[in-house]
Image (cartoon, rainbow, N blue to C red):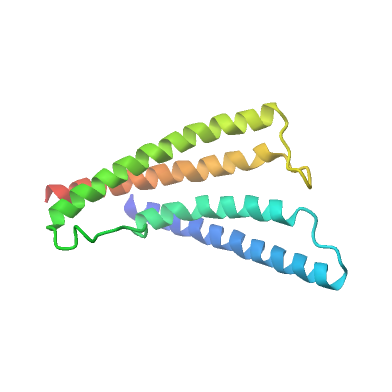
Length: 158
């Protein structure tokens, strides 16, 4: 299970990196067009915002599984491994609760965006269309957090 989860998270992070790369190309192209012909790509900032959100959601599971989140271990630097594992488990449990609430609210927000026909200001992009992908990626994060929580609890019991 762990290997499959890591492989899927790695693939998701690579996807997120490719999306960020595409956003960088979009910005560079838009700036070049602005300088050379006086017209940037219409709605470039909207597309970059959407792409960046997708990229972040795509990368979060990998960060969680590789324990890459920022931690402040000043007070626990010399603590026993078991104490650190208990604290890591508590942090993961809190993170799991927050991610689950975000997933729930994301669904409701996407439904509202769909029902009200919300569109981006410049290019008229239907805003609800990004919510299903973000929800799937956020659910993947919930699974990754649950897995690491399980691992932390196992470490704490040793």
